[in-house]
Amino acid sequence: MPQQRNGDWGRYVGLGLEIAAGVGLGVAVGWWLDGRFDTRPWWTVICAAGGLAGGLYLLIKEAIRLNRN
Picture (cartoon, one colour):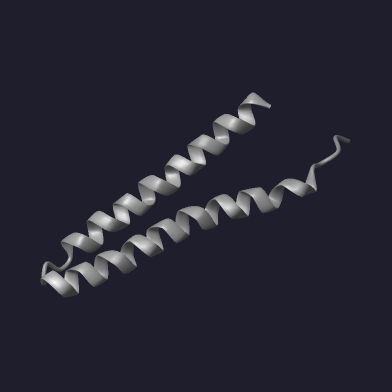
């Protein structure tokens, strides 16, 4: 039976939290900008997409780093 590596679960949880935090922060900033400039829902959508893109960038960067090892 192959031995499993139990120490990697924290890394994967961290990647998921980075994506969630990026989207959450983007929504919060977009919500504030929409309230300030009365442009609902455009800033919320744009900032959430930017947060998602940033989180996916970090995910891909980590996947490339892991693939090298």
